[in-house]
Image 1: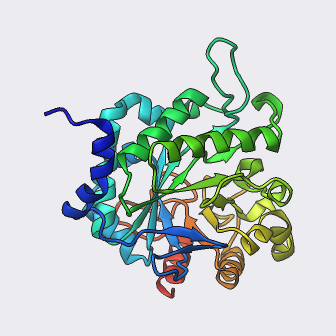
Image 2: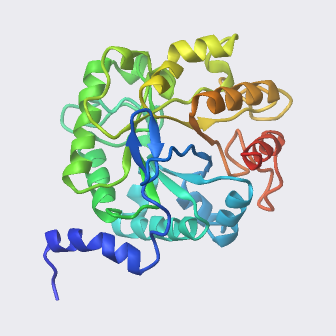
Length: 338
């Protein structure tokens, strides 16, 4: 039997309930907080995966992977979906991959952030005929049309699924030089278009909008907030993104937003200067860890830690036995204390 698309959309919440895939409570936005259905604020402390396809190829996209994330004290997990992975698998197969991850996260009581993991400038046009954005590597190559289709697909597919609580619209906007230019007004309009596409497709997840300077700088929000209700803002305040005193600079650059809107730091992390593979802006130590976790706790700001993969620095684990790295030991302790 072929079911009318509108009828299918109406039945999806019922489907998620009877299949057991929506046992966690629905998350929404109220003022500056993410809240449960009774209005109680909820703060997220979680872990970022690498590209799900990469974890699959390494043989660890399994129950043990998600149980370990939960055992580290996380209440959320973020899937870093690269356009290249989406292209390689195709829409149908990649949705199956995501569905398996969502089901395993739900079993552990973890909320899911689906992240369109691009770095670059979606607004700028690389070629007149292709309409592609400008990106530092082809891992992130996408277009406005594809990005809108991706989020419409996610909205339709996960409508009514409480586990998939957030859609991170674009990982790290990066402008300037050979990546082209865009004003905040232009970027804001593009993000509003994506949000409208999600809402028109019946999406029930909360859209998350990142700031400029590789998702660090939210200062433009003071004068030009996104014209949409029920959203959150994103920053990635790695140790070297601001000079000390961190607290003053973080408040100036992005922390002030949390006084009015929900803020989610979807990537925080540090790597010790003695560890191989370090680069700007990730070099730091436990001093940074203490500063950022205390800052978040005092302001009700959620955070996610990068990255639960031994090969993608700054790594939380040294190997696939899940041996904590230096920062892994720090953030595991921090999250368990929550």
